[in-house]
Length: 453
DNA sequence: CTTCAAGGCCAG
DNA sequence: CTGGCCTTGAAG
Image (cartoon, rainbow, N blue to C red; front, top):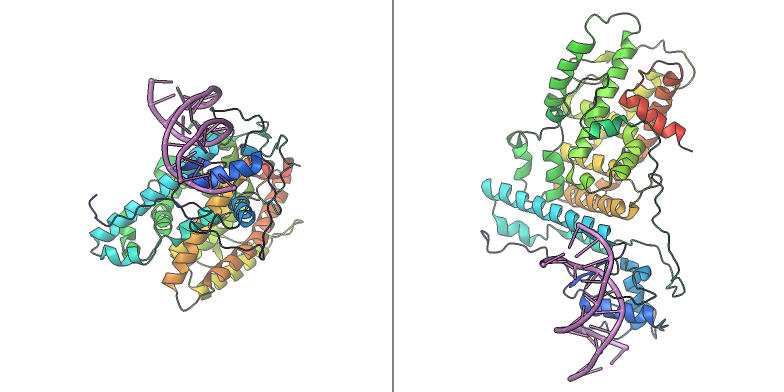
């Protein structure tokens, strides 16, 4: 109420743009499209388009072509299987949890918006101007996302769908899980809470002055752990763990300790994310097991970009590890890895990538619907699209002279992947030789990848 | 108990 | 056939 022109994030029906009346058959739609979809499916209706099957569907014209209207219903993600074959009334269906998460996601979006609003108002930026800029166009990606790929309306598919199966297995060793219950007592002694306390907003306030920064990107930036926080913890860690450790193997011991420390930071960072919290624990683990090496590689590369870490050295602050070139066993060498990493660092330097972009890219890596056996890939896909949309919005406004900037960032991502695979292979080779400390987070990550078929 | 997304009803 | 409003009933 404090701002008369408060932008209401009121939803519009993704089919026709009319006012939404609630969740119907998988997503927020208006009452009329709900009824239309129900009638079509219940009565097995087959429509035909008299034109080119690409009629525009809006509130005024939605009655004109039921064929295209139904196509659009399917395209935006309305679910045939949510129409009950037995016509039973009342109660709840299996989409209940999906609706709940979607609501939470939207709530998160609203909060980010309000926070952004407050920052901008406090920093004296006229509010009205950026509201008029349509700062929230990226949220449209939520509505236009195709949840289910249905090329043609198939009205016969009423049978049990089994689309979401409970494939969850809890057979692995779960160091992450123990972190989840706050009883982790592994080798890397890290106070996980202090590691991830939100950064002092003032230190990043200068970034929030830009009135056009998408709220989601600002949120990512504000909650991105910074170098000082990591360093504080590594100081403690190294004093405790590595004093007097200067034998020839200590270099690798340090690498593993550092990797483990970074992995802890990564897991904690993810866990603190409001978007990530919406997922079931099993999906959280699957995502982390799937992308840990990419996030690790990105962390190391980001350190060089953002904090100008020395190129030939690894990891954090004062605890840099010198790379030996005499790394002869089979598999990739640390030297190879650093060479390839360096190439990517160069690339990011040329791109002049900034903290906002790096913080957002981490979410693109984390929310990867390609991770295996996810319970709710649809939600993860949605988040990915949302993050991508916010990043696109950000790059467009921050760098209007480079309209293809997002494509370059995504290209970087596609090049990061093979590097992270190589790094994983490297660590796995060393793991096979018994060099990776048991019960470490790294140990768990390597097992999760290589034990699962 | 309340919620809210299903199905049902019926004037237009 | 449409779409606004009503009834239902499992989940929380």
